[in-house]
Length: 174
Image (cartoon, rainbow, N blue to C red; front, top):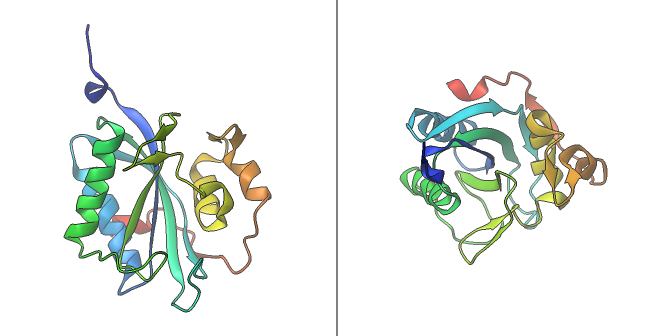
């Protein structure tokens, strides 16, 4: 049987965050919207974390989580889908690392390395950010990123100020 990439389910991981309005509700809605599609399914979701702002520190704490998905979408189409969900949820990109209602990043996609203008996978700087690595380790601690397991990257980063906001991994179901 001849199948294309679009017909095959491929694993990917997503990072989600926000700090304006009700970011927990926004992240949950975004995950439910992805899971409701016929070309994406959410297979695991991390605990919910509250994290101090990174980069631009004069703003409210963020909520962060990661999700493992399976998708039939190719990488760029998955990114476009995530950006469409952000836009539908009124995400505005005013300043780098600034406040946001919702942020959805494609962290990894089926072990591929992609370096295109619109998409870099693995996500740049993810291995330096405990607010990404902590939730990702919840669902994929053994996942190899740039030759090392997520759990190993996490062990070499500072998680100062990051706390579990919700232990229940079904927090996103609403």
